[in-house]
Length: 237
Length: 390
Image (cartoon, rainbow over all chains, first blue to last red; front, side, top):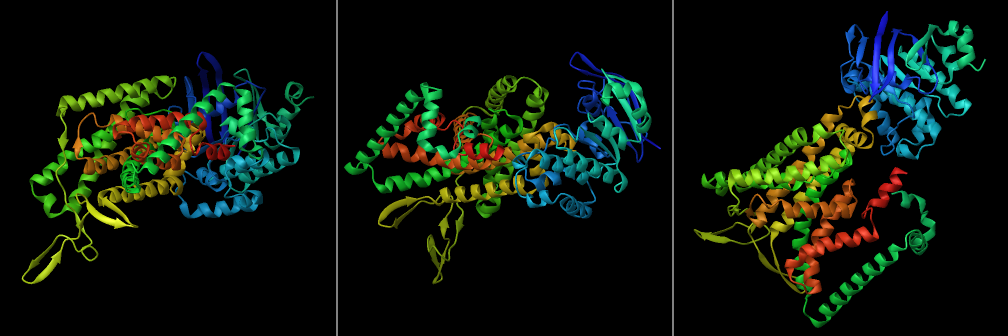
């Protein structure tokens, strides 16, 4: 069942036409990935969905309702949460407060401590540092915190922007296993933006390739892994 | 902030200073000037104390007054610092927000005096007056944010700053046109308390002695403490204690509630806070409301011991509270509290200690500002903040 449907989306950054008619679909329960080079418009697409850089034209239909005109916090209330590029944890809030910020819009208050316990179990480092300020964490720990925060949000649709950027290979493995867990156990639908195209395609049900603001390829993750032009451009083939 | 991060603490004070001088030789001149000012001040204090021109009594007495005045500055300074923390903007109309609280509350307390309610239920009447002052300040601040600042949210930073100065003038002139420029005098209030401890204002009726206790608002009492003969007004302590309670409440809201957490998140990164589902505009309004509530309460307390209120009364306390906020480190909540109290005490103690006329208190507060900016541009709590941010 289609959860998110984007139709002919156009977004401008000032005078720069960043997204030039993107259409894509995310079905409930899927992991969908959006790959592409620097400046292809991946982050802009996510920010447009979230209402941070509103669309000039086009529709964003979530659960059958057009959300393209909603302010960011109302998009979150409907169940779409973005874990932004560059982690963006709150450096002056404690680790625990950062995780609580993730659960900001949740109304099922009694379940929040259960999820907090799960995050601490999954990332024991965060439990050790629960009272430390977010800014004192290392890069890897900050990414754990960003993932933990996304976990705490329990969104219906999670938008992940470059979660593996700048991380050691072992840490990248860990992040991808958390993504898989979120999808399988929490039934979170995921739209994943990645530069690490091979890992992203391996995990994805559906994939789209974005280039200079246009979708150039789309198909199942497995199909795109076989596509010669995709291999040449993004898989270092 | 960056310089604090670059200088590891191991270098010590001298090493740090040497490096600062090497990077910027102008600093040597500044430090020299500052040092001379400090030395002259110290000399004046010592000679005044030795010659007996200033007594310890004077100093303690002005310190008590300074505590009350400083509490007022601290409460106003919190409004500057909260808004700065969230919007990186100096709300120069905050002094007028303070004025509006005292001025509008005047009508409430005046009406209660005329009806006799003030004499019958002074405590309740005072609480109502404070409530009215807070609501008045909050209303002005919310309108200010909505009309003057929100449309400029994405404008260059200088634009809202100029708007704030303009808004300050508009509000002041509006009050002058509406209510006149002449000062109005708060009615005399007596609030008696603690008859068990203070057997004052006693009267004997049918052979039974009943006492009212001390007058917390109007009273002034001669007491002897540690050999010093002091004339003490309880109202100064009341102002200080109420300010402490209000500041504790603010601290609780900012540090321990969901709204406070959202405020701190918005202060650090608006976009990410929005992605977490925080309604950024709402949090900004709440920030203005909190600051204005403190200013409104401070305004009524200020009016209780100063008695005169007028549309121009907001300017000086406003600008001094801004000084206090810078003194403590702008954007830093404990800094504003400490900076306010410190400035209040300095400006009331320093004139008598230096043997200067009290009219020079303004020179002293802004002199302190200049000294602080030379020696500690980040304010008293600036470095703590830098460490936390690192």
